[in-house]
Length: 121
Image 1: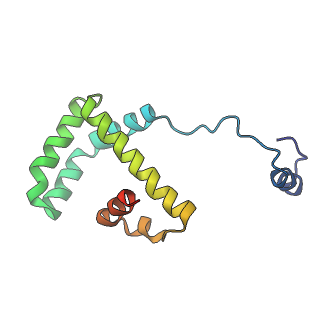
Image 2: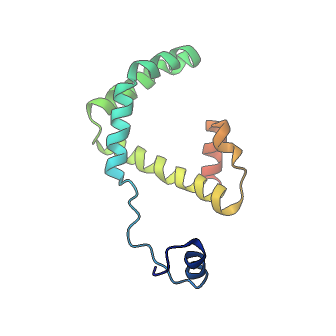
Image 3: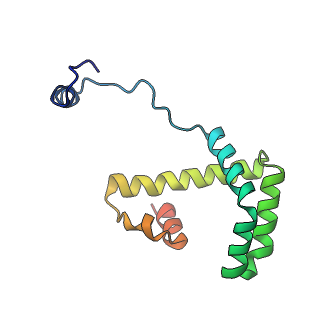
């Protein structure tokens, strides 16, 4: 976008539709995978302690999932799971940001509500 270096000129160019985004610099999927691996690897024991306190019946399956992910983060299973998670996250974000759904769903962080919103048409 070509404009003077002031907000009025920039807003005027935006109103006229004379702008384009050349590069957005969003994180790539690979960077997200690497970051998830780092966070989960470094937080393994904290996650397991939290699960043991809040949902002890899921402790063994969560432990297996974390250990499996840490040992082989590039497996097909984890790429499918992460792709599904990103897709569902984008759906929820779009519904809240574009279609006016209640943004409090992000503050409450209820897995049940987030998953049901992401799966509903």
